[in-house]
Length: 348
Image (spheres, one colour):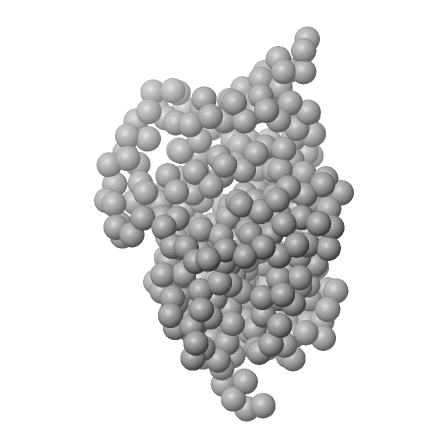
């Protein structure tokens, strides 16, 4: 049997065990999603600024955009999650434009950034990339880091390698829907490629499917109706406007399965809870939805217990994409974080 045929069969099988219900059930659910309210009319992905390129230490070009704010005492660097891109910060970008100097970038192999080699598709490398972005785009002045999901893990990797930055150059941290370890990796796979597999089986399935990643991407496109329902189920807790679901689905679908497979092994191996104490040198806000199926709220509670002085905001009923689903609550928590960081700078 050809690799392509094995991949197609494995992909079909994974989709089959992932989602209960018939094709009719999916069609009905997708119809319901499509007829929800439109929510905010601002077009997703429409917020742009002049791009610049930061070249990582291994030569990978990173796409960076900076929203300037001349009187801002702080620079906030937003670090997005797995299989997303900088556009996921839509509501935060809209809310802080002109008020805070804000840096957004696509992590390696995501969005408009260049592709990583397999050996450098690691959480540790993402921490190295973050430092490179800081050195080139924020060479001076105090910085607040805000990371969602894998973006939070990137911050932990930076803290592990350079704890001395926290309390000196870095004056605040926002951790949204993230964890420092103990993650069941199949949770991250589910919204990007349907799977009801356990962790060990999921690891084997991803390795097998990666050998025919182009065929898998074809299956993902063909199964768009199924993907939309799965995205809605795993990315959100409450009923959100259809545009939110479609926006997240577009970002997930634009991430090649080869990239998903390269980063996937990182999540089961992640163990940086001993590192997070270094963040206690600065104000830390931890935000998570109580209905998060990918990084459940228990992870955020554990982070809060390990980071001295940190605050935890639990968004009742919200899912993993809380930055969209409860953007007003998230921005309110970030307001307090930025104020606390600003006060810290003022006391220097």
